[in-house]
Every structure is written in structure tokens, then in C-alpha cells.
Length: 459
Ligand code: GLN
Image 1 (spheres, rainbow, N blue to C red):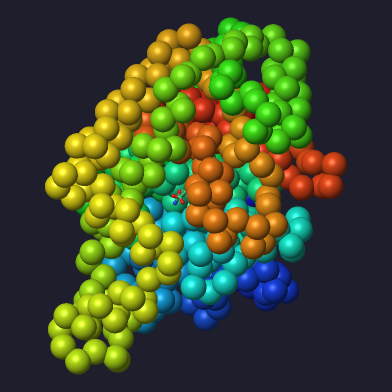
Image 2 (tube, helix red, strand yellow):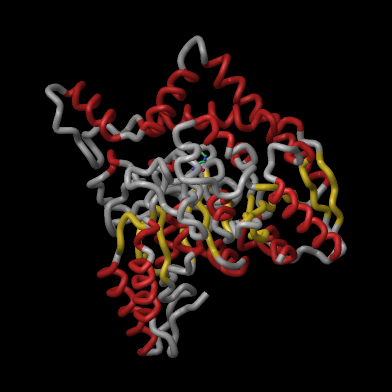
């Protein structure tokens, strides 16, 4: 990525990014543009460079921030009406680390409200358009971030991935997107969706950029008790020059997966074989429970996490209330999107007495099976290569009114979050109609650094 130095100023980089953001306004990528502050910060970096002072590893690099990361710059809305008006006094740890190295946020990006969705159509601000076809979805929930990178507005963007929200939009827009191992990057200061599966990650144009960002953002954070010690910077990126064993999942090779995606997978397997690696077919029967388990566990956690939005403490408050109870009712009815409400209802249902054992507990058991399935798989192979989603970018409006059709889009991405393992979307060519195709490279927990390095074998 281009970093400010004596030859190219941070101000130039930032102004170029802001100009491009305006140029692509019709894609509906940004919920906020950080013009004034971004230019001010760029000038400060340029002064340091002029004085010969030390600057960070991301000096003057413009980036886009998914609008569910808290910072005092602009409102943090999570693309939900109920958070409008929320200016955060705190800065998310991941953002603080990026900015300490000189990265400059030029705007906040659109998402499915509270990250609930797979197309960015559930946003209060309307959908973001796909970078390659304006009639198609950007993917989601981090659609705005993916398109900002794909259209080359910024060098990188942040995302969150609870069940595919980084990997799927990355694949729909032809770029890299990493969901790290659960706990690798602090979730402090990020609007919670489902705390046991939420992961912070990035969109980039190259594996090297991904590595740089990971080396900066990863590590233990006293403010997030689920963070792991900084294994990322301690791990060795070298994939010892033995031939690697790459698993492909038998259950994903069927008619319900788009034929061009299956072809792309086959081609990448042939490429790996030509480099001396071994392709091994894996049976992973427990993965068939992943989607059902996910859509029980995640709504349960969503219902808990969203209960704090009451119209008193954060953002929007309805004017139509006559009592405290009706203030809660009106604020939540008017402030949440239909998909948010659906998940709150499902979540409370599966946690309610009488249904807890039948749904939540069963799903938790299925989750354990899935964790074991991945452990077994990684005793046989080094990595797994699989589709990210069954289809390339679909048409705007095609699935948004059919929640089950939308949930089915997540069938190949959610198991990684349940198991906590890392997954990296890699670009894998185009369809006949020129839509990007992507595949995900999956590794065991804490293999993130090696995974990024191995992705170069697939170029
Ligand atoms: N599409 C998935 C869902 O709707 C994943 C969302 C996410 O990763 N934030 O739950």
C-alpha cells in the first residue's frame, strides 16, 4: 500500500481518497465522510515527515471504517436508526492501534443494521451497490467496506465477521477479506452482535497488506477478556517447503453450489497440485448442522446484546411516548430494522424456559460437534479450501424479503465462526458475466499468519 513519505504527502493520499469517495457517491458506501479531521491528521503527519521525525507503519494511509466501530469521529450508527445521534466518547482498541501507526479514517461505511444480514440491504440508509454490477448486492454485512476497497477508494477497510460478514462481501467484490481466529483482535469498542462469534478483521487488495494490518491490530487487550496473547506476531509465517495437504469438503460439492464457483475451486486445486501440493477430499458431516445452530446461537446473543438499546442511554429516542414503558416500546419499534426485530424475537424464544433445552442447548451441542469436526479435519490436512457462499453476488431485492433464502447464503461461512477458526477470502477469477468469484482458505486456530502467507500460493 502507498504510505506517506518525502515523495508523496499524507495530505495528497487523503485528498485523493476523499475525491474518489465523492466520485463513487452513487454506490452508497459511506454513512459519514471524515473530511476535515482526515485532512488535519494528514497535515500533522506531513509536518512530522518534513521534520524528519519518526512516523508509523501506516503513515497517512487512508482507510474506511465499518460503521459499527466506536470512535469520537462522526456518529457510530451501525446503520441502525436507533443509534443515530450516538457520538462515542471512546475509541475501539483496533482503531486506536491503526491510528497510532498513522492510518487515517476518511469515512464510515454502510452495513446491514447491527451487522444482521448478507447483502447490506438491511441498512437504515439503503443498500450499497456491488463494485462490479450496480444492480447487484455488495454482500454483507460489511458491504460498504468491501466496495470501498474494491473501487480503490481506500487502501484497506475494517470489518466484523460474525458469520461471514467479511468473507462473503470480499468474495462478491473480488478482494481479500480475513476473519481471524476468535480472540485475535480486541472487540472492545465494537458494537456487539453475537459475542461468542464476533471477530474483527480487514479487507485488503493483497495478502501482504493483510499481514501488515494483522501485525498491528492483533494482541491481548485488558478491555476484552476474550482476547488471546499476541500469537500472531510470534508465529512463523513460513510454510515449511513440504507439499501441503489441502482439504476440499465433499458435502459442499453439490448441485446447490453455483457451477462457476465449483469450477473456480477446481481450477485453484489444479493450481495447487501443479505446485506440488496435495488435494484431499474431506467428509465433514457435522457441518450440515452449522446453519441451524448458528441461527439459534446468534439470535440468542443478539437478543441479549440489543436489550441495552432502550432510548435512554444511546442514540435515538422516540418522541411518541407517554410513559417509560411506552418510551421503550416506541423507541425499539421505530429504531430497529425488521431483521433486528426478527432476531430479537427468535433469540428470546430459543432462550425461554421450555424451549431452552430443545433449541439453545441442542445448538450448543451441535457447535461442539462442529468444533470437533474441524479438529479432526486439521489432523489430516493443513488447510481447507472451500466456497465462501453458494452463489456470486445476487440481484438487489432478490432475497431481501425472504429471510430463509438470505440465511441460506451463509451456509458455508458460519461454521468457521462457531468453531473459532480463521478464514481468508481470496479472489478466484470471474464469472462469464464478469462478476468476481472468491474462495475461502481455512486454517486451524492461530494459523492466521501462515494462512495469509499460503494465500500467495493461490495467486
Ligand atoms: N450473514 C450472517 C448473518 O446475517 C453473518 C453476519 C455477520 O457476520 N455479521 O448473521
